[in-house]
Structures are given as C-alpha cells and as structure tokens.
Length: 380
Ligand SMILES: Cc1ncc(COP(=O)(O)O)c(C=O)c1O
Image (cartoon, rainbow, N blue to C red):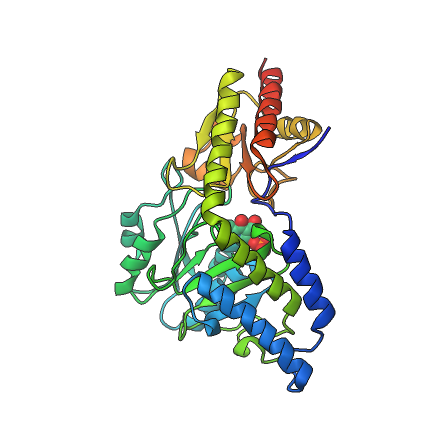
C-alpha cells in the first residue's frame, strides 16, 4: 500500500531544486566564509547573497539575519539572549500557554533562574486576546514572545496588533514564525517585530539550518561563543551550502505561496467531504479563518489517539498527534489543553494532518477515505 505523507508540519521533503542548490554549492564552494583569501571571499559572497535573499522575504536588512542550526536555536537565542542582556532592566517575560517547547522550556528554565513568566491563556480557537497581552505588560517586562502560527492547530496570532501595542513599551517582541514563514506574508517593520525565528526544514529546505532575525540595535547576548562569525552574534563556521539551499527553498515558497495556500485549503475541504460522506463524527480545531493553511487538526470523538495513529500508519496515512517533539510519548497536547481545559475529550482523540509538497487532491481524498474507514472501525 502506498503511504500518504501528511506530516509536513513535523518536517517536509526537500524540493529537488533545493537539493540541486545544496549539492552544487557543496561541490563548488569549499572555502571558509571567514577566510580572507579568494576562496574564502567567494564563500562569503555566496553566503551573503543567501542572507540578503532571506532578509528580503521579511522586509529586513541583510545584516539583521543570523544563521542558526534551526528554529530551536533561534528561539533559545532570542529568549535567553534577551533575558541575559536585559536582566538589569527587569525580569518579567510574557508568553502563551501554546508555544512550541523550544519557547516554553526556555521560559521554564529562566523561571528557575529567578525570572518571572506570565503564560497567557488562549480562547477555544487557540488565539490570545490583545487585552490579555496589554494587561500582562508591566514596567519590568523585558520580553514578549508569542508565536506567529501554531504548529498543532494552525491558529495565527494577532502579531501586527501585538507589535503595535508594544510600540509604546520597551519590551523586546519575539515571534516564532517557524510554521508561518513561506506561507504567510511577514513584514518585520510593519509588524514591529524585534526578533523572529525561522527554520528551513519546515518549508522544503534542509534540516539543521534556520535563522534568527534580530532588528538592528536590539539588545541580546550571544548564545554561542567562539569565533566572530555572524558579526559576533553566533560563533561557529557557517554552513554555506545549507544557507544557499535555505534561500532557494524560501524563493520557491514565496513564488508559490498563493497557489499553495489555495491548494491546502482545498485539501482541508476534500478531507471534510470524505468524513461527511462516510458519516463519521468529527470536529475541526483551531480558528476558522485566522489559520495556517497547511495545518488541519481534527478530533474524532470516541477514538484513542495512540491506537488511532498506529492504525493510520498501518493504512499508510502518516500523520501526527501534534508536535513531532512530543509524538512517540504522546503526552496530552499542551495546546489542546489550553484551548479546551483538563479532561476534555479533544485531548485523547485529536490528530494533526499537515500538507505540503507532493500532496495531490487524489491523495488527500484517498487519505480521507482511509481515515474515515479506521474511525468507523474504532468507534463501533
Ligand atoms: C513552531 C515551532 N517552533 C520551533 C520548532 C523547532 O524548529 P527546529 O526543528 O528547526 O529546531 C518547531 C518544530 O517543530 C515548530 O513547529
């Protein structure tokens, strides 16, 4: 039986054009971008071209892009970097209950070090309320870190409004845009974003590279120490082939964003249609309109997520119960918990379909049929 990959929010296949960019850069550019000889300067030029191209996608300056090993490192750098650089001004941080663990666990570590963290609640669609952000702000708030789009349910946060609110407050504004970059329009200047995290492997780039956008003059302490790469903000020899491949993936994503968003909406519609035709009971989670197009979280009442996932896998439907980092252990999702509360049936019976490269209408329909068949079998 063919497998149908519906877990693109966990990681996505690398586009052929990206593999080509990666391989040719690896073959042709071997210099260290910090060397001052010809080969080093060549590597530097290629690296900075990739940096400039990525910067343009979010309306940033090239010098504001710091390459990292991925989204986790970008989040850690933003959070610890801000906390340590600004701790003399205050020790209060605001975040939400539904952040990725790269943010939540960093905040929890800072709490153990004496910082105070406010974890804002969300409504049943997974959105924070602007007035909650406003009320939580204090004189000693040094950082507000709120994700752009949620990886489990897709809900997009009111980032521009939060940015506008923070114009009158000195707190640094960080957003984790790992799931949103490549599909959503992001303008760091218009949205007043100071720090922003991105990862290449979520949008058909290679694993192990991402970037942190850091607005010029924003205060943060380095997270990695060593050489003076990345203008002394992130030590370590730069991965030039991965940076070039990342920029290529971002180029493809921006060319195709409108088409992809339409296509992914259609995949959601197809799955819903198949569930309705099969007359199974289901509930779509997340915000009806303010949502990432590629994430589709659904509760199937009466199913148990562990056996459901195993059955789906055996039927060739590759999905996840939420964040890939917690899949395997399958703890109840902290995102669904924040949305629906303790003991809600959604916590035991929800799965995440996520769409991307290679998925077609026919495959989505087939996945919908196979899923519905399993639900019918499991809930009998
Ligand atoms: C919202 C979000 N933030 C951060 C990360 C971590 O990114 P990376 O896998 O590049 O470390 C992920 C990956 O699942 C994510 O979905």
